[in-house]
Amino acid sequence: MTRRSNDRVPAVTNKAKPQKQLLHLVFGGELTSLDSTEFKDLKKLDIVGIYPNFAEAEKAWRGAAQRSVDNALMRYFVVHMHRLMDPDHPEAADKD
Image (cartoon, rainbow, N blue to C red; front, side, top):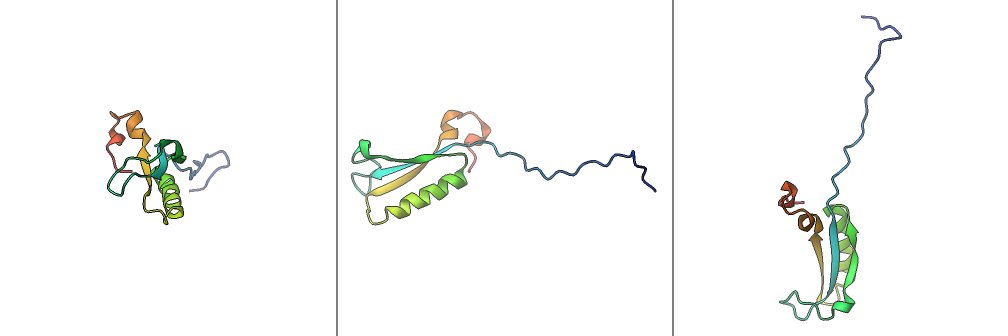
């Protein structure tokens, strides 16, 4: 079959589907004891940041935790904000 110049060829696109924004908060601070999640001083909490997905939040969490490795009472946490903001959404229960 020969092609005529006015025949259209569908364009091939390799656009990635944008990822859904699943916000995560990374924060930490010094705890009152090793077996507690109570912070020693709330005014000294380290708010590392808010990230658009778990992978980026995990990288930030690892970096913050590694910087504080010399203090056994320092702990950093990842909060799944998207689950708090929309708890009825099916992805709220999914593992990130």
